[in-house]
Image 1 (cartoon, rainbow, N blue to C red):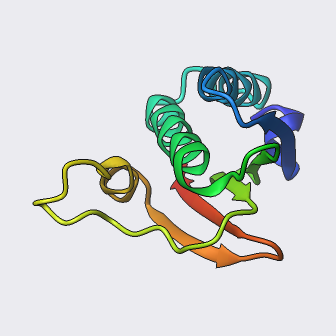
Image 2 (image 1 turned 30 degrees about the vertical axis):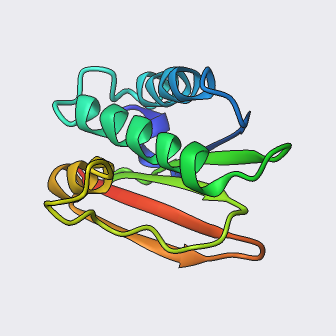
Length: 132
């Protein structure tokens, strides 16, 4: 384990309300994983897919016009936590089978060890955790 993996690490980055923010957030997450020595981690692709899903949900449902969202990633040597903070109302939920869209949280729930929604003022934070 290198020194970066032995200490808690965090990366925060704001993104505008734009479709280009989803791939930009995924690149930011990939950079963080690589910097933390997790570039070849077998769960890395799961983390990146969940970053895509959570940021897409924030853009579609949670970021009011003219606002930004925050992608926060943490690594503590035991795993990785991904958080997407937005200032929108509402609580995300896993879609029903009959719903036409909304499969993103279903994927997050299947890939992450834990996920959830927390309150913030204004808005919410949706998070997913991946054990190492």
